[in-house]
Image 1: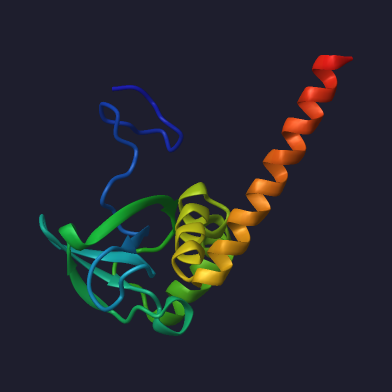
Image 2: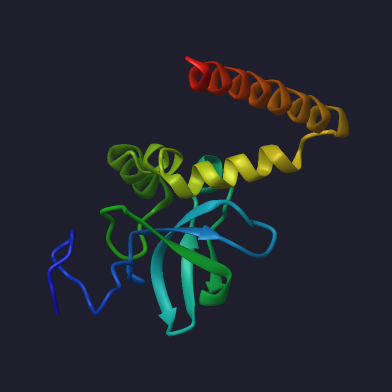
Length: 145
């Protein structure tokens, strides 16, 4: 056992299923939304809450297979009220931490790429060709000099 960033670490794991852990729902109607673990029902199920007006996830039980644990943890006790959880999320700046993480940026880039039209992809291809042509010209000029 080696101490990690939060003072605890098992093997190579740093993301534990614990109350206050911010999760990403990866399956179901709330797919792609953030929620917070507020209670552990059993070894396969957790009770999560968004709150719904903040993240769009209502209070519900989710199986562990449908969630992904993030590095973000919110300081709350077991089964907090929605108002308490909302205040804890604001105080810990959890949503901004998520938005600035590389995981969230990759998901946003993938979503933006999926939403491009055929004409947008064509314009991107033309811009790449123009950039590569300019780079080749500059490299050729530097080789001659």
